[in-house]
Image (cartoon, rainbow, N blue to C red):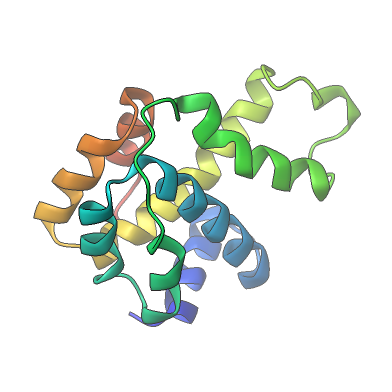
Length: 141
């Protein structure tokens, strides 16, 4: 799969444009970079579009990257683009949480289309439990 096709898959899942899908994808890969061991990151990178490989080259597993830290890059993106109105400035707001989970699942959906089942197993084993569930719940469409 080419990077453009990957971003299009994310865009279709999220019903957004390709540029926005690319930004979301890069934020999600940043989060994965903090949760994957170098070995799992290399395995995943080998199956993602070539243009994305470099996003996982400096993977460094950090167990402290829980659900909240995993979501942080996408929350920052949403804030910077003012996608959420003023009443949703609370990081614990359920609507903000739902939007970010949906974005992460859009990327996970595209990843599922690219990777082999053994890679999925290694990837999900590296994720915090809640994020692992988001991956499993992401549709394969």
